[in-house]
Image 1 (cartoon, rainbow, N blue to C red):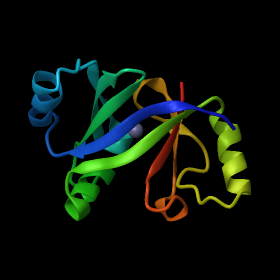
Image 2: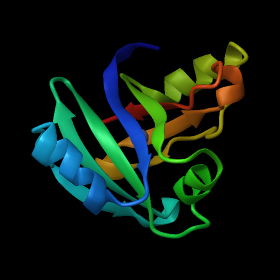
Image 3: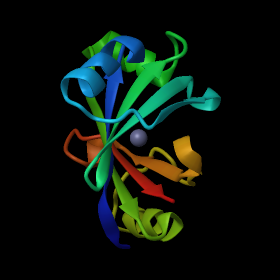
Image 4: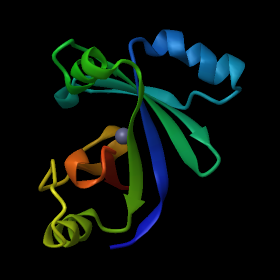
Length: 133
Ligand code: ZN
């Protein structure tokens, strides 16, 4: 497997509308657009930063993964996403190396990317997302 770059950093927020003011008005980043991923009960908003992006994540429902995350840990950095050249190969290789996978197979993420998460128990507490697009 080959990691090409940090694709994005995922930040859990209660309200994209509110937090967006920080990233666009105060920090001066461009809001590239928002997208709701219904299966994940999440709305995402992307802000490019150089070769990577900040991804704000707002839950569309209290029982979604981001809703539960904020309930337990509060707002803040939620995951880091690495872009890989071939996500199926990466998952196979990591599994063979004993890494626990949340997603055995890639699923559809925002922007038409193929994504999969690794279990934080295998990655010293960091929720790692793999992304291929
Ligand atoms: Zn992400």
